Each structure stands twice: as structure tokens, then as C-alpha cells.
Image (cartoon, rainbow over the protein chains, first blue to last red):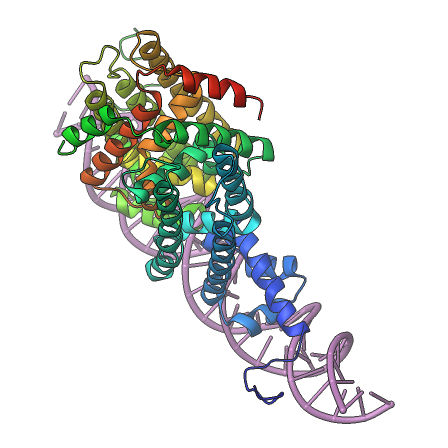
Length: 229
Length: 229
DNA sequence: ACAAATTTAGACACTCTTGTCTAAATCGTC
DNA sequence: GACGATTTAGACAAGAGTGTCTAAATTTGT
């Protein structure tokens, strides 16, 4: 609103640009070396900035780390929701459309730089900063999973799928679609496009064999009978 | 063979016992703090041993780390193969038997102390020691996955399942059975017994909906048609 | 109980890192 | 071109951790 007097406005561009490049470089170094192993001098060098500038912007190592996690979480969530918006609510070819969605989700949110880094930081330092990662959990999986579940529920309601519990189905969808990428993720690698497509294809096919339109009464009865196992 | 002259035999017990307790303590500290953050003094203290003893046994920090990974890999693999040996080759109640197998696998190999630690070390330091973890990959997933796949192939051959590709089915089985534990694993937590059973139950049910005995010709034809997508 | 080996506590040198400080150089804007 | 703010290079103190060394204490097998 106010033209240019706002107290929170730093020197127009260069400043913010440097802040960004510092956070970016820090993300890379924290991922490679872990929090304890990360070296501020190295971060400064990779950001193309002097060490003092890092301290000017972020105060200390821990605050810098938190800024990194917050930035990554925010960008990843934005990407995930943008991708969820492309979910095939009225599919033409259900199999192809779900495969496409799964591939987009993987490529845009999980296998890209931000996704890879955030995942690694959560795995590596999650136990050290409970509140920080509780926040991630709440804003990340806590919101995206129900959103995906809702889309599957709509598909079921529309007669495209036969689903008992949309939340379970959503989690299993993700599990299936990533089933063949586990080892690669484990070691911090990035699967290539082909691997992602292959895993998604196999995963979706199995998903549809299980949940595709086919309300077989025999199965329903059997499941009800075993429900209290 | 030789009574007591063997050059590799250290003082009978206490020595080896200390070696063990050092490696154990080191595993815990490396997991909590990462390689760079791990403190030899702390490891010594947790092992109930003096710092010098740590150096006497393992030389330096890096060699100690390698010893930890090797020990964990070996124990985990042993556990996994022992569990695979309990795979239900001639199931009475297929669903119940597969759920039991999945729960055993999780509890004995993935959620126990060794499994949790090894997983975390692979995620955290995997990129820093490529050869070490290549070894793990080869001796771990590289051998256990085919072993599980072979068991599923046998079930299919016996008419209990309808499976195209046993390797894919095996990976998807693991993905499904762990679908609901992902977030917990991500943050380094240990799911409780109930969560494991619940996830396994849901996963096996979906698995059987997809691969259970039901050679529906319609499905087979559809898949063949889409095979070159 | 003896002798050999192992373990221990403590001190030590050395390196690395964090975070601060200062004076000079640079940048952006008017 | 000049001004104010930011950035920079470098030095610096303080702290922490690794790995070595020594002499004394303890354990182990016989």
C-alpha cells in the first residue's frame, strides 16, 4: 500500500537476490555434508558471497538452516498443490491419465532439486528439530495426502474406481507408483525419466487391477467378513 | 584348528565384547549426529570405554564408521534371509499368511534397531562412501528382492496368484505393505506394532485384489492392448 | 599369585570452525 | 559524480574435536 516507506523493504533487488543465492547454496551444502559438517565458508563460496554477508543476512548457522528448510517446504508445497490441480477428475483414458499425473508428481515435486533436498534434510536432521519438521509434516503430507484422497474419492463417486477408504487408497497409490524408485531414493539419487515412467506405469496398472471399476460382490463380502481381523 | 597359537586370536572374550559395545555405541551416535557431528569421546562414553580403547580397536573415525556399516549390513541381511525363509510357500489362508510375513519382515528387519540404523546411515552418508554402500546395495536389496520375487513366482506357479512379472510384484508388495509407514520412516521414527499390522493388512488386501487368483480374460486382453503405451 | 597384555585417564599438539570486528572497496541511486 | 548502504577480505579470539603419547591401573590366562 504505502509507496516506498515500508520499514520491511530492503534495497530493491541485489539484496534479496543475494539472500536467495545464499539459501540455495546452503541447501546444497547442508544436504551433502549434513548440518554439523556444513561449512559456512563453503556455503559463502558456493553462493559467490563473502562469509560476512552470510552472517549479515541470517545471523548464525542454525537460523540459516531454518531459513533453508522453510524455503524448501514452501516451494515444494506450492509445486505439489499445483500438480494436484492437474489431477484427472474426468478422465478419458483413466490409466494413461493417472500415469501422467503420477509422472508429473514425481518429476515436479519429488525428483526435482527442491524435493530431493527437502527429503534429505528431513531424513538427516528431522530428529534434531522436532518443531520445524512437525510444521513440515502438518503443511506437507498433512495437507497433500487428504487433497489427493479427495480426488480419488471423487473418481470413486463418479464410478471410475471402487474404493473403500480413499485415504488408504491415496497412500497406496503413492507407494505403488514409487515402488521401483525406493533404492534410488534411499541413496540420494535421482531416477531418470524412463525409470519414473516405468515405475508409474507398473504402479498404476496394479492400482487399477485392485481398484478399477469392478464391484465384484464376492470380494466385498469377503472383505467385510475379514474386517475384524 | 590350531589349539591357541593362531596369530589372529585376541584374548578370548573381553576384547571382542568391547569391540562389540564400541560398534554398537558408535552406530547410535553416528545415526543421531551424522558422521561429521559424531564425537569420539561421546561414543567412548556410551560404550563405557576410554577414548584410547576406541582408537586401539578401530584406528580412526572413518574405519570405525565402516566397521559399523559392515556390522549392520551383515546382521540385517541375516535377519532378512531368515525371515524370507518363513515365506508361506503353501499357504492355508493366503491373506493371513502374507500379512504375517509382511509383519515379520517389518518388525524383524526394518523396524528393529539394526534396520533403523542402517537405513538412516545409508540415507545420510550414502553419497559419501559410494563403494561401501554399493556393497550394501549388492548384498542387500540386490539379493533379497530377487529372493522374495522367487517366492511370489512360486505362489503364482502354484495357482495362488496371477502375476506377470514377479520382480515388479515383489517391489510393489513391499511398497504397498509399507505405504502407511512412509512419513514415520522419513522422520526416523519407529512405527508401533499396531501401525505395522494395519499397514500390512491394508497393503496385502490391495495386493490380493490386484494379483489374487482371478485370471479375468477381459483384464488380460486390456493389458495386452495397452502394453505398448 | 605372576606375567603379559589391555585398558585407562590425562595431557598434549594440531587443525578446523564459528562468529566478530575493522577498514577498504563496491554498488545502487539520485 | 557523490552519497549512503552493502559487501568484501582478512585478521582475530574462543572453542571443540581428532589423534598421539605416557605412565599407572586393571584384567586375563596359567
